[in-house]
Length: 112
Image 1 (tube, one colour):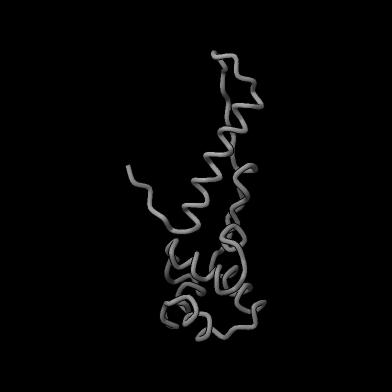
Image 2 (cartoon, helix red, strand yellow; image 1 turned 45 degrees about the vertical axis):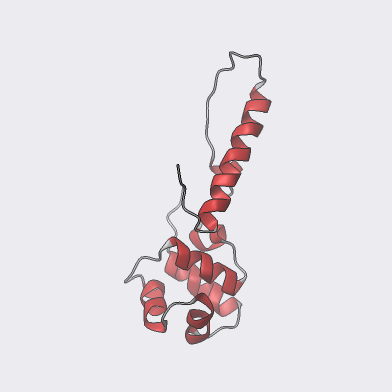
């Protein structure tokens, strides 16, 4: 997987959305200095901040982070012992991975 500068992607999304840094920061609920540090790479963006920025700009978390869709990221090997087909197991796995990805994008913590 290619490394993506999240700050650069956020800046591109901000510009594409026609927002100033102040307007994006206000919409995302973070301070403008914090947003500036994220964009410059001086501070790592936290997942809730990335989600808020994605909502404010209309870009997806995947677009901002450079992480491909779950189906493209998933690599698995399985052996069926209960008569399940490989396609059926893959579909079930992707269902759970999509749910996990959605919860991550919404910044909903996993609880046990």
